[in-house]
Image (cartoon, rainbow, N blue to C red):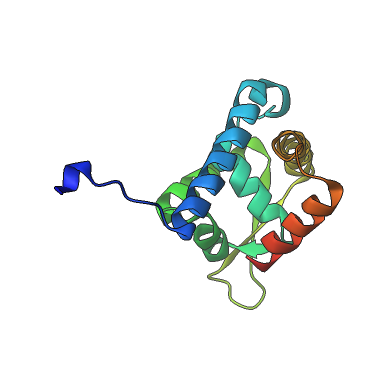
Length: 146
């Protein structure tokens, strides 16, 4: 049998990857048309991820943000500068190492983050609507392990 006619059965890991991808696309598809409602400062998807990442910390260094987002340092630096000009984030020098910049959300950035979190909560609630409360708790437990 030649390779063209062979049907490959996906592995468990491949099926899981495809399921996660499908879930992420459904979340994105739910958020995208509503962005005008919750994205008051036109931060976009990467900007939303930046605010969510900074929001996880009181103060966070740029390298942690760059690593968490898996993006190029120059791309994130430009985004941070843009968000500073918009008044969404602020930068301060680390008291331990003056070469290190620490980032935090401004009150305006916190408001934008809150809007994004609410929209994300609604989108995920819709995606997970077929799960029972017990299945949702189990899913949360599994996600926390990841």
